[in-house]
Length: 228
Image (spheres, rainbow, N blue to C red):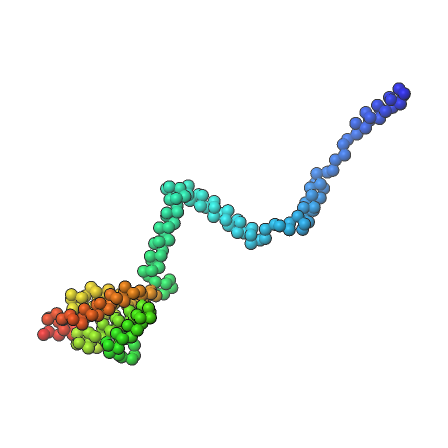
């Protein structure tokens, strides 16, 4: 029994001296990578678009955090700054019209089919009734100028612009010069500047048309400077 026991003890000692079984590091890593590259492990992975959007969101978040730290008042201050910038851009868009369309005041006031002031007024009212305010403003401005021509307060002249008509009429009717210039500018804005007219603009021109019908010319100038 002692011999057997001694033999067993020697065998155990010899077995403990053997180096442990170990897989080399590089082949093990390659085996793990091959295993993880199988499609079954990537069925729920985000696609390319989702990854790109995620990266973009992270970038915007970092940018917002950096700007918040630099802006007075932190995130709230940055939000107010953004709202102010948006409001300024909207105001410029409304005032200057659609980008890409350059305002001009060189267009003529009338087309090639002359009509009376009464006809222009009738057309303007029809557009206004249909809420076509841009066309209504255009026709009412034409009615104003045509009426001044019919009363000999302006000499009929082909190719006249709204600005020219307002400037000439303002010398004959100085009490209405400012309103005439404003009316001409509004006509140019909606006709050549890409803006859209509204009801208040049309009502101002209609009121000006009515007032001009009752207005008396300046005694020293009539029809472009003729002395009376």
